[in-house]
Length: 293
Image 1 (cartoon, rainbow, N blue to C red):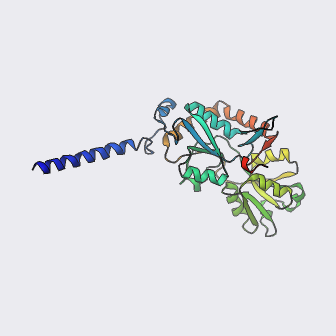
Image 2 (image 1 turned 180 degrees about the vertical axis):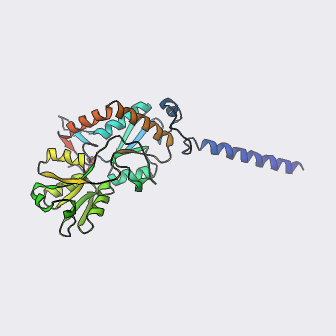
Image 3 (image 1 turned 90 degrees about the horizontal axis):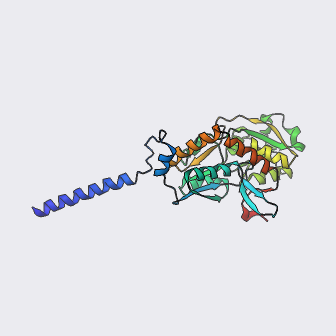
């Protein structure tokens, strides 16, 4: 009888421990409505991939969103309004900012694998990414457009004219622009490339007839390469830029939304964009530093 009683008590203790463990594992419970919490309340419960740090994935080949600004000594530093927003978020949360540069495709897979807290890479809220990340509130409304060189301008009277089997059309791998190229130019030779800089280089070299590029990015390139020309805007349902947030961190998402809404309302984001545009017109490098000659 004593053995049976002891066994029952042991089983009850196991169940109790499991229940308690389950509660601890749900610290960032995505079923909780954090929208009514204050930023201070969210900060008190916030956990990140690395304690004390905000780990951010980015693809620094997308000026003025993210790129390297080269100073008078030739030293590069990450710049762009996405990077300014990343620093603002880290500061508001009392965290050290750690930015990890990688190819654009990598920013999506790393965030989906839970290896970083957020990703800032000029994301649009593409529904196809919803299984890999949460989307913040929109912090900047841009647009999509089709570009070519002035030498190729007579080929394109409108977007439909780009759908030609004789043309090579570029877009960045894994991006919204790649989807737009596939949708609008199914008959053309669509070439997806890892970096926007390579797409621009191929267009300028006459190896590519045109390309789908985010409008603000295209305008930034056109300042440095006057041979580039926008053909037309490209309709797109999910216009606007968002922060990609770790799918398992609803508290972080709620905190970022508070920070974004305040920064949009008080003009901070507009200031970041203006400063990034000015920097992007200067001496810059776009791409991963290990690829730099």
